[in-house]
Length: 462
Image (tube, rainbow, N blue to C red):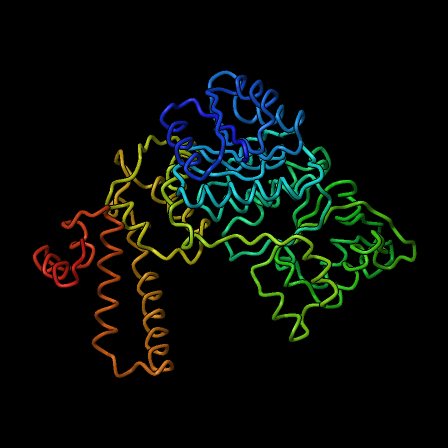
């Protein structure tokens, strides 16, 4: 029988977890703080520890470090209601098996428990790492399951020198994740340079990256050191790597293979020790197929791949992002906006955000700058109102795609059923956005409350 140590300073949480896990046949011991957890772990040698991050006295991360040092094969699942990227990364670097944000689903927890216990049986040893605190990475906001997955990947790959490929749409925060990897790596005290391959003309990109010798071309009156030499011992981010010219890709491939290159116009081989992080919003696999991106370079870059979700796929993070940006722009503009109205928040939630977090930041920056009230509202500034045109274009495109799908799947004869399904989903979404408020839902849908009630009765929706 596997033994699990449950650690939390809230008795109700300890009780519910103990009862749940005992029903699954596990032997449970409990602790209410980090110090007691270390003592019980040393005495009972549990197979798994489930521990809260925030506790009085010795917190969960400090306790995690002690437990993993004394018993490296004991698996630890951290849990918290205050999820931030630095805590998640620190936990993973210290050797935590997983990191869960409260509240979590019991089925999800049990699945993680089974995976952790299975991993303990298979593992031979565990490497632990010291946590590195840096306020700058707090700019990465989100505790959705998708972002927690990203944090875990960053925590595992950061202490290594592995090449990382970060994929994601424009505005998802690829550079922030690259900086998080850098800040939590062994190269954190060395240089970090970011190069946008799409922003520099092709004829200048090579000299920017690799430098040039005097006389290499007209106007080259002196030797210039490129970014790779400047970044020796550190980390370089090659943003928009998909826009790198095919001819220059071969030179980058050599750097990845043996760390060597020649300056433009030079014959001397320069050796550098640089960790490469690449980022792109393009489909490199498709580019490889059509011959616009080297296959060998793609596999060299794609040692570890981190995919950032678009904002529309992690809308549960929107409230935290909104609060963060309002606070940030309050400081920037010396404003005192306390928050956003319910109607304003609904409008933000109901937008597709094609520009992702960057677009949200720009929208809220304008809103904070021009708002003269205590709370942002849909009509307090033009920036929130201006989203309607973009939203309608998104909807029109989605409707066209839906109509095409209906016909290509041979469902054109089910016209009324398709309309009813769309109407039902819109009603459910409106109720979800307004937490069940029928008056606000009807206003969102542009119908009367009585009409909404009839439709709810007709669809048997609660």
